[in-house]
Length: 408
Image 1 (tube, rainbow, N blue to C red):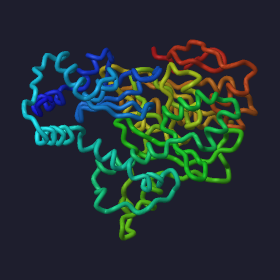
Image 2 (cartoon, rainbow, N blue to C red; image 1 turned 180 degrees about the vertical axis):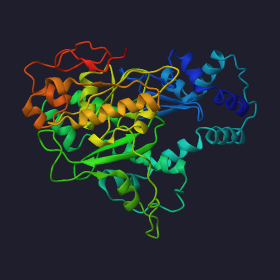
Image 3 (cartoon, rainbow, N blue to C red; image 1 turned 90 degrees about the vertical axis):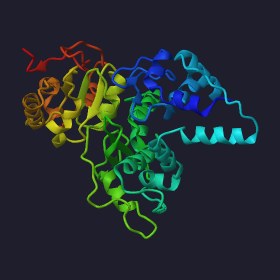
Image 4 (cartoon, rainbow, N blue to C red; image 1 turned 30 degrees about the horizontal axis):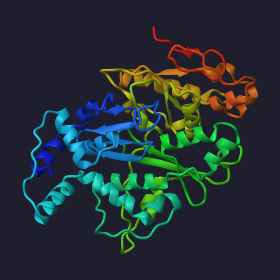
């Protein structure tokens, strides 16, 4: 039996150092997950809590449990492995009997996770509250369970994200039946973007930022042709959180003024590679499978692109390529609006953002009338989407890409 001091010393070892010992390469607190076939960095590390999480496997580990999973060891074996790898003296507890066992168990349990991960388990465990997002209804949460602090709001919201994750919605069904994605591709994309489902079968597009905070989201219905319903209007997740989550007295758990600023859909996937931004969540999801070389994000609407929305993408020490693909329209309004934002980003943020004129050049008059996006254009072309190199490394779905305002 290990002493409590030994276990405490082991828990203090940075989890990224342990990952390195396991031959897991961590860059910018992200890595490929070793537990599934990962091509996008889906494992996120938090040095502050000494934990990591894979958002495809939907599992969280501390430095000891990561070794347990990776090496298929029990708790004591993992602790001894870490001690040997990090040259830590392994002190055995010489006490015997039930009291020693109880003391060690209590100590291990007390230091097993951080306060935040404990709150997350509590939020996920409460399935009635978790159905707020998935079913737009729930039993009132206990006022003693959650308190209005930023951390617990974040934790509760992410618990709802996890509980709502499902492909049982109109979008996932239509994307597969319409031939945009195979069932396997749709499953990967749904896990990647944490797609949720409501009881009515609508899809939930969660907006999670680069710090893994739930910022906003949309609940949308889709038709069989994989275009959104013109009858059932989208609903924001924040409205549901403020109006459906109530305490035991029937009062809103969240204040009416509470609301995070929306962020790019897919921002939680931010890595060091090229970022491609489109208008609709549907387009980002499909393109993430068609062209996985890039990290695909969406603004959620023509008028949503802004300098502030682009700010989290800026890395002054290691600038990443960013390119936007505006939808087309007869007057070219979206293209001009997004071009202006790209110019502002260069001036305000010092970030060069390229804008693709792919659709402006190649879309027919009829396609512009329909306001098609890159997925629509590719799906209705006479040839299959094929990889062609463009100046940014983006793979264009139709013909060779040309990007306006090339960097001098």
